[in-house]
Length: 440
Image (cartoon, rainbow, N blue to C red; front, side):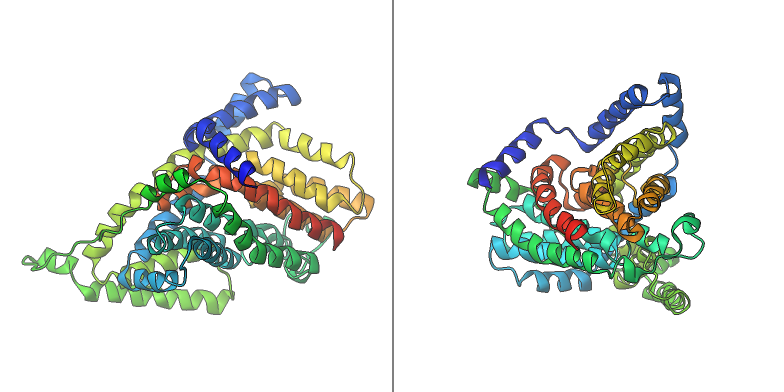
């Protein structure tokens, strides 16, 4: 395991470029594949790329706010002290990576955006408590918790098929979460990953060289106070900027809406309400608008990679979907599937397609009809087939920088710093997911 881990770490660190360059290379790759395997020519592929380029603008803003509001909330004194107290449970590097992985996994089960932010922030605090721990593996461990998101409460595919009126209702009906999220196979996969990932990552931290650990310890973000406050405001404008009353009033209004949201919609913890909660709590816990805005200024710089790179992934998604390349990939896997193996091959094909279309909802929109039609034709379990696609979407996120960008921005790392470890996590996680889909 040590030899394999160090091989991937060195390979990735030597050859994997910055995440932005990775997105550009992936763009060229999909462009060529579309020309070779679909009826689209160069002009059509360029058209598909441009037509899809801005399709993720709303989602880009959402994920940018995940990073900024998460940073703001985490730097509030109350939250920072809470995270510090929990991080003190880690006494050794092994304790550190296990604790980070477990906390991130539980957070991602609740909500994927919440988990991404909390995992990265918690990794930083734990790294400060245990400086001898390899910070790269702590962040990789935090990101590995993202593996379970599509089997949790914010999983877009199981929640979509459980909603009356979804676009495949005529083919598969409404599938309750008792047959997807709370099915025996899904509960097994989730439990297996939550329990064993911390242990697996513990062995990862023992598999790196001392030289690597010494170098990585320099990467931990600074703990300096990012907020400043006017000590003696003199003008009316300065007094308003440093008024605790202003923050409390807008905070009370925000809390009122949060309560209304959950009373009227139940436990609907979508990305917008998560961002809203983070924003309102950040305003209140920083006490004054001046302190809040100073922290926002520091947090905004972390969102630069997301703002620039997500449109390129939207362009890639446009080429994959509009050219029919994704359909070709899905149909190829169907040629050797039967009623028993279809959920498993839905998982594998979903993982492959996710590399090019890293969006659960978007992927289901074009892969779902193909897989459900096949399941109906060969009498396979439709709910399990849908969850196969969902787990495939979650699985290859370990080697797709798209979702790692928010966590990396918060941690101050590059994709090459964690990707070697994420490859090992990808290889290991294939085992429990496959067992759940094939044997349960």
